[in-house]
Image (cartoon, rainbow, N blue to C red; front, side, top):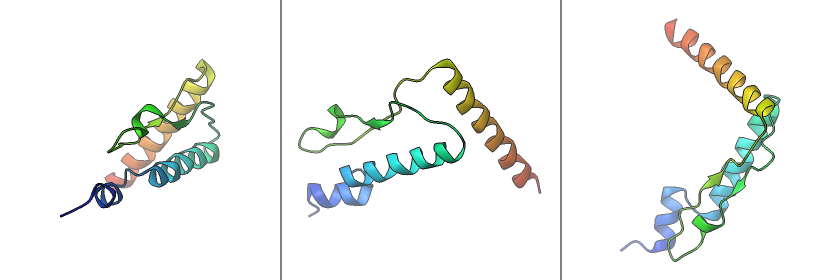
Length: 85
């Protein structure tokens, strides 16, 4: 029988996994020239007997939202070009 801790590890939803995912996202955004000032772990979702930790992307200003949209559009265009080959 699987324990709560082993289920959490296999689904990748433990606190450590969430922290690593948040850091990966932060580093990727930073490399693309985008900083989400409120990027954090959602405290409420990490509470309880079987937490499913959520990453809170937080709030950002209009300039940051536009920068993020531009990076995503560029990435989407590059992906479409690669799959068209």
